[in-house]
Image 1 (cartoon, rainbow, N blue to C red):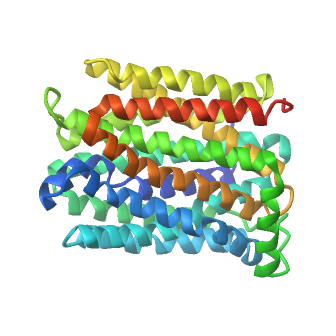
Image 2: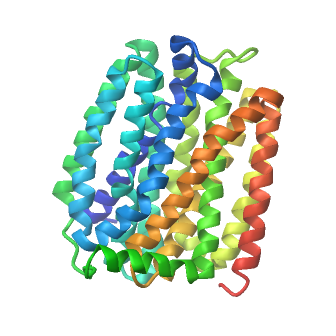
Amino acid sequence: MQIEPRSIAVAVAGFCSFLNLYSPQALLPALSREFGVGAAEISAVMTASTLAIALTAPFTGALADVLGRKRVIATAMLAVVVPMAGVALAADVPALIAWRFLQGLLLPPIFAVTIAYIGDEWPSAQVANAAGIYFAGTSLGGLCGRFIPGVLGDLVGWRSAFFVLAALSFASATTVILLLPSEKKFIRSRGFASSSLQMLRHFSNLQLISLYGIGFGVLFNYIAVFTYVTFLLAAPPFNFSSTLLGAIFITYLIGTPLAPLTGRIIATVGQRTCLLLALAVWACGSLLTLAPSVIAIIGGLTICAGCGTICQTVATSYVTIIARKGRSSAVGLYVTSYYVGGSIGAFLPGLFWNSGGWPACVAMVIAMLTVMALIAAMAFRTSN
């Protein structure tokens, strides 16, 4: 089956955004040692970018409703190369945090607007499949953003690793500029104020608000699990190197085939049932990581990655279906909620880690999954 150039372009946009977002994660133990700070302190480099995303995502959506989709996506993808190179040159932790914050400011114009582009340009019946292709790109980007720095960190140092990621980001931007068609179905907003007013109207939609709650929990759990498991595996008795820590993110590849399949699962069982099943299996995967075995931990991480991809695909594709007006701002609000969850998921589990280690982090993840399941069960009682 031939893949459309626009499908390749949205997958590359997803790849680029998550390549940038998660780039320091496998190197956190190494950065902690180099700069002489603890796990909670060095995790601020993750919090900085997710917080920046949360602060700017809805306004990015409103801006894209005025300026158009491709223009915003392409400009942001070119600009994000700069802070990636800045991270490579950072002299201390505050500089790392500052560059990561700037990097976070530039990511919503890529992924939030790409999702809105999909909602505009694909027929409603094909949105979930197109979103699945996009999220296949994000899962591959999340893997490369962790695996490549982990391997290069051991071979040539973490600074060179970030320069390589900057080059990959530039190549991704060039690909999208060449392959992504200009929007044809986009209806330009009458102005930023009008688009912002439409953004406020989204808060009257109970299902959208519920989806925002689901999004909060998805990234909270992703960040909590995949950030603090690196500290678990870097410590005795596992003693993983940066290369091995990067290799554990191969588990993200499970999302590449699962994301496109999610559209078919939704068509068969509906959004609500698909979401509840994914959350239940995700909880089982989280518990599996408590076993004192590398094989069990990797298996649990694979389950977590796969179920997270399914939940994210369900939620974001449904946002574009429910929000018939102001899709960019609706997706922007989802992204804000998603990354607020990620910011808290990078920071709060650090406190639990300090007091109770990995079991305490897993207990927090299970509690969040329970809340997400309650939201899905109650808010989507009437959905198919």
